[in-house]
Image (cartoon, rainbow, N blue to C red; front, top):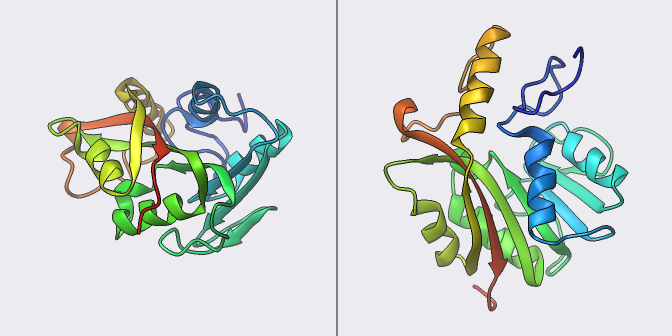
Length: 197
């Protein structure tokens, strides 16, 4: 399996998908929200741009934003101040980003701004299993209605195990406020509600 990401999201290449579920979970999320090419998709926190590249291969009009954006169709920027026009995207992906963001509310407000009316935010991230409703509440406070919430903690466990077997840190980006014993991983689809200021 040299140079490829396994379904758990760990890659042998240093600049590939490095999150629980990997591209498999991303593609499942897009299918669950009924989003088909050539929909406009923004990957907020795109990292290496691997997701953007894959989505473009599938026919989506995808772009990415990251502090250290790399790859074609990716631009440097902060999620708290997305370099995009209002109502520019059908969907915004935010995978393994909100939990480490300095201001998750600002990130979600910006995602809300750049989505078309009834656009969809796809969030996959770690969460505190002792407070599973926290992310849904955060989304609600920023003008979104959760349409799907799935637990993917098994993907997090598989990711951590595979990382350890490769000699990497098991949970490198785990936020300080989540105990490793209470860490879970979820997928959330949330529809943009009325305009939010």
